[in-house]
Image (cartoon, rainbow, N blue to C red; front, side):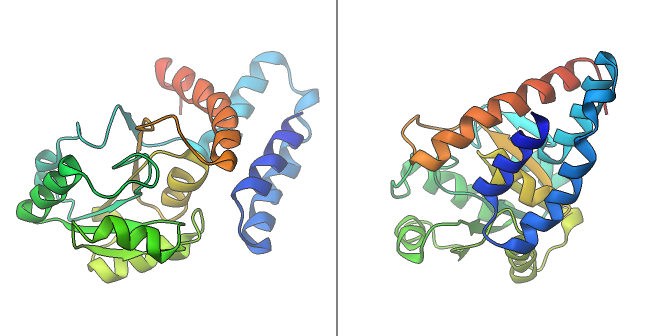
Length: 216
């Protein structure tokens, strides 16, 4: 069952065979779970899902104390767009414009990192005027690493904020970046994302259970 679950995740998140192969190594190790006692299975599941756990989960990108984070030494912020900053497919609204203006004034470098085509990303960026990368290939590392290179930041002083575990958060963790998972702004989403949300609920159950009991 766990083998099947992980294979589904690979299929719906991987854009290339290399990424799928890297993850498949872990799937094979999870296939022996049937021989593990019930208590041990919870620990093993946590280990299997930990790659998807965000560093922080918050209600919205708009409630984060960015000034405090700047004071802690962070200098770059990479954002997903759809359902992170605005509803899916929408242009930048006043709230998004004000947030990004505030971040620039604080001193942050801001980057948009999206798997969407350039037309969609540019539509949003026209009103906020920051750097962006389209067709980023999340959850692959390359887009995140390119974003940091363009911002002139490192994994140690960069944050990523997004609404999806299997693309946004997983990619940030693979790149060594602190990740914030936010709740989707609007329930309207593309069908492939809707399917991933069902799987996310399972992972988030174990994440919150782990968090509640102080697990690692």
